[in-house]
Every structure is written in structure tokens, then in C-alpha cells.
Image (cartoon, rainbow, N blue to C red; front, top):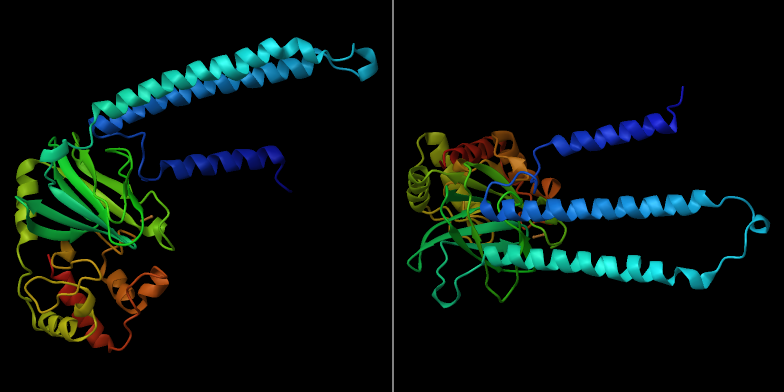
Amino acid sequence: MKPTIRARTILFALALALTACEAHPSVFAPAGPASRSIATLGGWVTGIFCVVAVVVIGLVAVAAFRRRGTLETHEPFDAGGGHKWILIGGFAVPSVILAVIFVATLGTIDRFPLHDGEHYRPDIRVVGRQWWWEVQYVGDKTLVATTANEIHVPLGWPVEIELESRDVIHSFWVPALHGKVDLVPGRKNRIRIVADEAGRYEGQCAEYCGLQHSRMMFAVVAEPMEDYQRWLAHQAEPAKAPSSPEAARGLELFETKACGLCHTVRGSRAGGGVGPDLTHLASRQGIAANSYPRSRAYLQAWITHAQSLKPGNQMPNVTAMTGDELNAIATYLEGLQ
Ligand code: CUA
């Protein structure tokens, strides 16, 4: 038996509802004052547009059902009689609604200034790269630590982030914390985020930036100040020495094979700047800009088949190694806590 149109529609609606339940970045679950304010404004705007849509659909329905029949049974249509409706419904009402929304939007923007002008000093510098996020922690103009794709912030504290790009335009967006701000080559943009609920908030590049734009993700982890300070102090340290002969072999391979040409592990001879800093890779949850979980299997798959997992990215497939060598490198990387 073939499903009827109605059954298909219900199935489609159910599928839509289910996809909405997954843990995607959402503007409807704000965790900071800015996102809460944006969500409130968004709720009002959506509500107003729903009311307008219902009114318009109602008027169309009235017009369609009021006078049915053929042309012969009705008087000829008087084109001159509807101007008043066009002026009210087409100009006056939209103008008032758009003006109200405009003023409300200005108010929302004004409540959360993005920077303090001349005396601005960033806490974090985020550099957009195709297709990942370099994250530099800066204190008193000196670089404290570099990491990637995972930004830790102290709970309840405003954090000043400076945004720049190394290649094309990207857009920094953590829906749970703030609106979008672009990362533009040759320009420094700023955003101030405050998280007042502890948690891990997913972020996503929000400006089409090439083949892997959709896999340019990151996360903001908001945690109590002590945890944050402990985390940052740890990130600032160089990598620990390998703790097993296999890991030591992995380090040697990492330095001598292609890896070290593109990646930095502070404390080793690997000092490349093409890919993410891997000094504390194992403290992060994801790899490939959070496209995949940082499991041993995905790490090995990424090393040998990065072009299958994220076609077009800068990491080549590194296949010139034995299984034992691949295991040793994975063991070394997993030890980079
Ligand atoms: Cu970066 Cu889209």
C-alpha cells in the first residue's frame, strides 16, 4: 500500500521535528545576556510576522471564498476601489512594523557594545583559517598559549575576543552566547562574550568560506574561574615528554615525517604553522575543527585519509608509513594531554 499524501506530510513533519531535537547550536537556548536579548527580540519578531502571515492568509481566504461563481454572475471588478487597502496594508502597516523592529534592534545592539574603543585589549585572538580556528590567549600583549577550535572562558566574566582572518571572510557564531561577527582579512573585528551558565556551547562558521565551510566548527567551554585558570596555565605549558617507548618512537616519527612541517608541538622540534597547534591536542574533544571526535580510530583515519574525511583541506593523506609507525604516532598524539 502506498502512503497517502497526508501520511507523507506527517512523516516529513515528524522527521523535521526529530532533527530539531539534536544538539545543534541553537539560538533558542541562550546562555548569556547578549544571546538572551537576541532571543527575546527574535521571539517578538517571529511572533509579529506570524500574526501578519495569519492576517494576510485570512484576507486572501475571505477574498477567495466571498464571491464565487463565474464572471457573468458578478459585476465587473472595480480596480479603482482598492487603493485604500493597498496604502494601509502595503505601506502603512509594514512601515510601522519595520520601524518598531528597527528601533528594537538598535536597542539590542546598543546594550552589548562590541568593544571599548581606544583602550581595547583582547583576552583572546581568534584567527580564521580555511577551515579551522586558531585561538591565541593573550595577556598584557604577550602570547600566553595557542590552541585551536576549543575556546575556554571563565563563567560570568566578559571576555574580549579579537577576530581576524588569514585567508577569506569567515564568521564567528556561537548562537548560545552572541550574534555573528565576521573575520575579515586585513581587519580586526571585536566581540565580547559573556556566558552566565556553565557548559559547552557549539559554534559554527557562519559565512560561506569554501569547500569545508560547514565543517568549520568550534566550541566555547564556560567554566568557573579556578577551572579556567588551571586550564589556561596547563595550555601555556610545553608538551610533556613521551611516557612510553612507543610514544617516544611516535614523537621521533612526528618530528621526522611530514607532521612537524605543518604542526607545532611546543617542547618538540615540530614548529609548523600551517595546521593547528597540537601541544595539548588530547585535552580537546574533537579533531578537524570538531568535525570528528578525537578517538584513536579517527586520529589514525585523519592521518592517512584526511582528504576523504574533509576533502580540500590543507592536510595531505600521509600514507608513507607502516602500521606500527601509525600506531606509534597515534599513541604519541593521545599522550598530548
Ligand atoms: Cu569559515 Cu565558513
